[in-house]
Length: 68
Image (cartoon, rainbow, N blue to C red; front, side, top):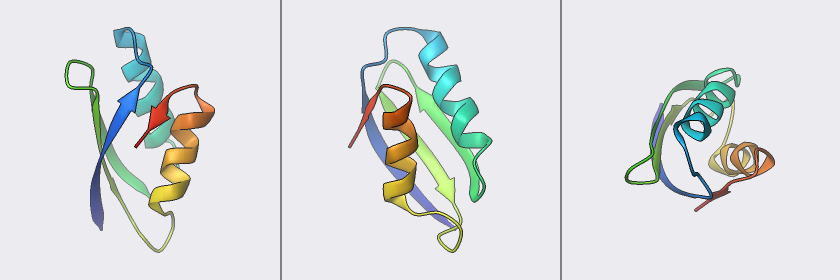
């Protein structure tokens, strides 16, 4: 398992947090995600054999946010 922190840009409410967490938690290979609206940081724990960091960023970007 690997854990990463990503800076999320474009969130403007609590629903944004729920959208990102919901999508990531439903993704194969993602064990757990926690998004903090105040700090604009997402912490994602995932299985490197099933998904990589670039795919996680892509999922977030497909939702309309920026992930760095």
